Length: 618
Image 1: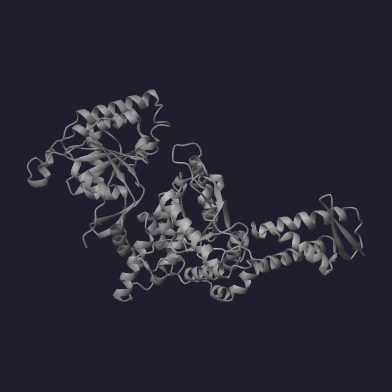
Image 2: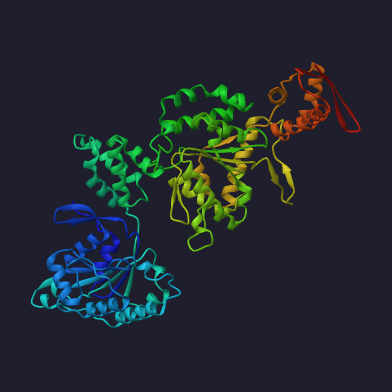
């Protein structure tokens, strides 16, 4: 098998004849796939670097870090003796602590050394100074000397290669390699306009590299060695696809977790999820969940009344999520969220209540849902609060409200209320969530959305603006549901395609738009009766009073509460509070309720716009 060399390694080999120093940043603490004497294996960065330089006749590496000083690699007697002789350092008993001044002398000796090809690696170079922009006098002199060496040194042919032919005769630098977390961790002036210093960034491994690494790790998974060729191939593909955006070290950790949890090749998705989310228990795979969802229609419609088409479509999407078929039409669905729902329609018709009900159904607790009111994120800068500030900005180390919440509750329903009120640039972030199922905050920590249900709510399409900018109601309570659905869907498409100019976001949502209907009079009466039952239950819990009223009082109260259905169930609740709960509280406030068991509301009247209740308490 031909190993795919990472880009940084190819660039290093290409630039060794013309660059004297290299600033290497990014995933320097990752593992790398290297061809060693014992075969292909995953190795740390220093080992991968050495395998590359050894092939070009380099004899050893000197490695310096601010804590442990100087050591030699490989840690062999011949390398230690050669380094001690050439650089006047004492390495026979381990590392030698040296000052920056001594390190400067080692660099000067290195770049002019003709007896041996070798390289100096300055590890943890990000920690050489407390602040790259405010150096101490000694640090400043050190970087000036290093800069001068970068400009004045020349490639050389070492004495031990002078009489050899081929690659070994080529003049190469004895390079200095700075290992940093970020390129800006070194003084900006150090690499600015210095053509002798090359900057190499190590990114996350690509699919080909992850696949090759998965081949090396595969024998450690239970059942791989005895599996069929087709099963082995499927395992490797799923391992490489599921680890998108991860390091090779993460692949090794996943393998270790799988071994400890006794997970075989058929459980690779669980192993990846266990690493990502820190949880092996998966509510989506519980046997009882299918039974709960199969019998869920009456349960949901008891809580969300009068929205049969919306509930049926929501259950269809939920069943698809439970079966793991979300995105099945694509060649690779990656780590997309389990389900995506876009609830649209008039206010107060049950959109938020349905999200809570789904949470109760799947996770057993409606409080497991995470709610974000997108009207709070109408300004561009508010995206830092939701998703985390970029590195270097105030508060970046705190992460974002969304990313933090999903890391804490990876199995949840995430509700984005009134999504159209968010700033368009914040909406752009949802492209990554909907497509890749993950988001990285300013701290560099990744939140995974692969086990969440995303619910967006919106009132788009109920009201529209005419050419004069006047807001008008486009759909009304007496319109048939088919007309309401058509107009609202059309308005949503126009909003994303033309007003936002982001049709790709609409494409990610797909056909998961669920349109809710207006509350009809018969449904309004059912909602009203349910609210009266809630009031009766509260009275019993608080005062042990049994509430009753004659049908005439109920009818008068119902007529007041359902007179205007434009605000849906929430409007009914507000009207019931004004017409019944407030005067009831006023009347009860004047009574001693100790020992009382029965409360009858015998009459409802209004005088000077003040509603009065006549009570019989016994």
